[in-house]
Amino acid sequence: MFSVYCLGFVARSALEVDDGIHDISNVGLDINTGLPRFNMPLELGLFFGCKRFGSERQRKKVRIILDREPYRYRQFISDISGQDIHAHGGTHTQAIAKVRNWLAAASRHKALPGGAEVSSATTDSGTIFPPYAPISAAGQRT
Image (cartoon, rainbow, N blue to C red):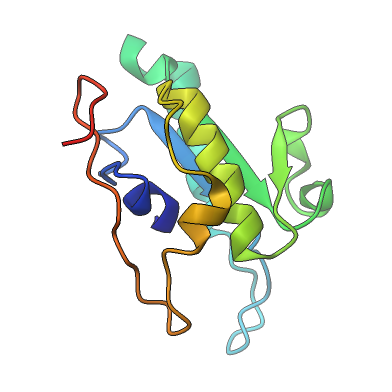
């Protein structure tokens, strides 16, 4: 969400968007119940279902899938083998850069600031400085 916001895009409901950002790195056991947390893989599965069986608009959806380590996903969701999974090393700076690069390619907005510049838009406390104006439907910053 941080990269989306800082780059001037607007985060919307999954029903309203054609793009999906799925970070499956937070899959693990809940400390209270000892049960696995599979929210993100489930949401990714729904995304794939919509893309495969949905309307024409749903079939045109594009996505990025992120995980901490390359091929780690094979241990818990092997059915997505063959997808282009982007490893971010568990760091926010790499995750931001991966999402930024994907948004630039998927949106065809080449003049977006780089990942390091986007990462620098936070303070040590995590407060976001929104230095970028939103991008209009015509592709111009407003």
